[in-house]
Length: 227
Image (tube, rainbow, N blue to C red; front, top):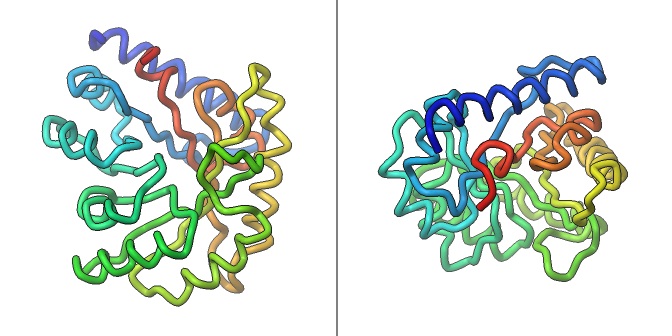
């Protein structure tokens, strides 16, 4: 992707974020744009980073390990794909934020790796909001128990919830799922703690997600083009 193409794509997405924020009385700086760069080569990703998207999301540890050293200007790297326990150490070493924690065994593996690395790992809990067997995520009814387990792991810091709603060509179909995640975040906010962040919305539906309270949107195709 050429630099002018990347600049135009980024501008279009930023304008859509601002428009969605305007419709619901929010400020654009309340929404973090995560550029999901999986599958795309480093040169194409660099063009988007140079155009101002400095927070990236990757879904495979190995791919990120190979790609990230070739990039400059990245300020945060988010793991947005399903993560196996045996990749916990590598993930903790590489990612600033891991958005796909969905079970106690993974949380415990990440905690052990973070403790060994001397860091507090920032994480989101992924919720299987549509009860889809093929997707990762904790069931909504099991969220409280998982959060309780994680609250006892001092080397993890739960910053928010993440979801991937069932696919639908109509962005409006995702709205009830986004609304449910926001309700779960409010219900499970620890007393005296700041609100849980909400990572929800991708290229096809991020404007709806923002209207329902998304603090992080994970945008791939709209920024990088089709994979």
